[in-house]
Length: 108
Image (tube, rainbow, N blue to C red; front, side, top):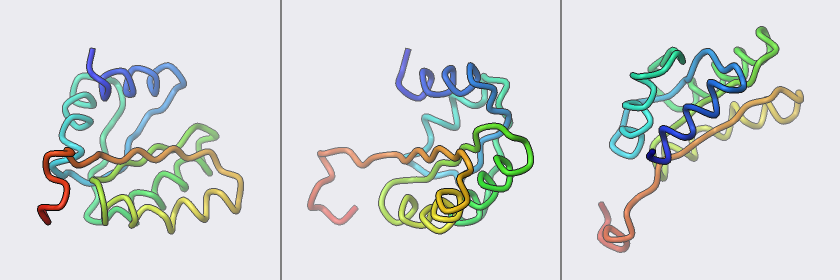
């Protein structure tokens, strides 16, 4: 079992019904894991929208909101919605991809 498959299985176990995020190279593993799960992926155009949608989902469903993004700037863009979730005490989990250490310092 791969890491993203384990994450998706755990999310299913706690009743998450939707995952909000943007497609990207670092999130490809998560997207593939979601394809074979009961969790509905909602693809957004911007990561900030994904975090606000996860916050809204948590607010109106009383379930864990889940959002994801690619590494670097994509993950940084999640912060606005996560700040709202934190300040209003809504349960939101954010997951980000990572860049391979082989790429470190290459500007890729």
